[in-house]
Amino acid sequence: MASYDVIIIGAGPGGYVSAIRCAQLGLKTAVVEGRDTLGGTCLNVGCIPSKALLNATHHLHEAEHNFAKMGLKGKSPSVDWDQMKSYKDDVVGQNTGGIEFLFKKNKIDWIKGWATIPAVGKVKVGDEVHEAKNIVIATGSVPTSLPGVEVNNDGGVVVDSTGALELPKVPKKLAVIGAGVIGLELGSVYARLGSEVTVVEYMDFITPGMDADVQRTFKKLLEKQGLNFILGAAVQGVDASKTKAKLTYKLKKDDSEHTLDADVVLVATGRKPFTDGLGLAELGVEFTPRGQVKTDAHWATNVKGIYAIGDAIVGPMLAHKAEDEGMAVAEVLAGKHGHVNYGVIPGVIYTSPEVATVGQTEAQLKEEGRKVKIGKFSFMGNARAKAVFQGDGFVKLIADAETDRLLGAAIIGPAAGDMIHEICVAMEYGGSAQDIALTCHAHPTYSEAVREAALACGDGPIHA
Image (cartoon, rainbow, N blue to C red; front, side, top):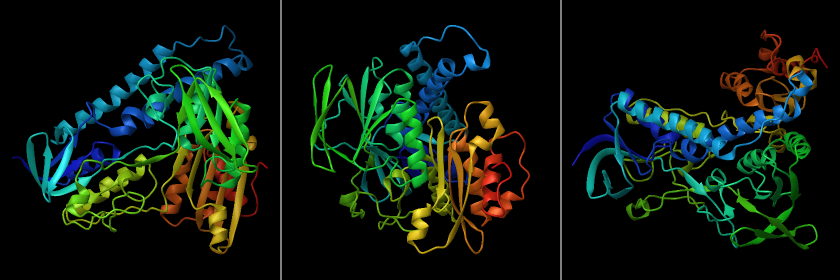
């Protein structure tokens, strides 16, 4: 029987980051993971492979639509779908192999298999029981589905995000259920590859929870790229054969029923915590009504010695949120102070253009009764963006009307996912819009649009 200071169950972004930080802080650490590779959903069948496909298809789009404008003339590239999937798999392999290297470097034991917790301080994997002073649940999440919609990733025509990464061929017609991050990213991939993509969403807008200005602009831009939207539609079910599917939905506005034919249906209706088989309920661990592990401000459950982080607990299901919690709980276990600022966790959609947000939206702040001022700047006024055909979109900053302190931001445009961090750092330190406006930004860069939006919170932008 092996004994550890901490055993972490799950090797996704939360788990493996927590393990590395625990080891760096001098704790004897092990990670239980049943996959053949480390990295969890994110590295294996989520963030990383989807970004590889988004990258490949973005280059395809550029070749088909913008190369000739720049004087790069010639035959447009053809798509070798199998080779594109091989490229995606190579990217995954490099990243998961890198995590295995980091485990060896930091002397972290990888216990291969699926874990149960038969008693406090004990983790069983196969026939072996390991002892741990502390156990961290980092088991992540799994896709959710809908009543009447049965997912079959093993060769079926109704798939979730995992199956959508491994389709045997590019479908002529793709129906996407859900206009959230996953549905729009993968829908964008297949639209660029030539699929006729129709997104069916229950709400009357896309990207629920995001800034209203972003929702409107983003929808228009995606429609220009060929995506079709059916909003305010409640999916009733999917009738699938071996090669085709018929999706039935009702429009909320008049209760009328309609059908949609597709070669593939992608179910992208969100995710739910995955804690099945661990034995947490039997140990008395408390859960929220939504099935999340209930934790306190230090990521501890109500059972002494058991902690939880990432998608398994309350909060946005984002890899970087899990990473922050992973490092923070490691600090706690090492007798230090762990901290996560939940008010400054950015969210990104990696389409083209990218969408990035942080903090509160204008609507949320007004609902709270906060007086705010808005600074907005279009990328059409940004020289670098126009030079690369990325003039669509904008930067929007939200600041307190009295103190000028930054409260939130939204960017839709080129490299939005990278530019948002300037605003994150400013918010982390209680910065104001004027702080950004007075900071010199290199020219020509996309990030000048952030400065212009900050100037718009004061006397006005220069290039608008």
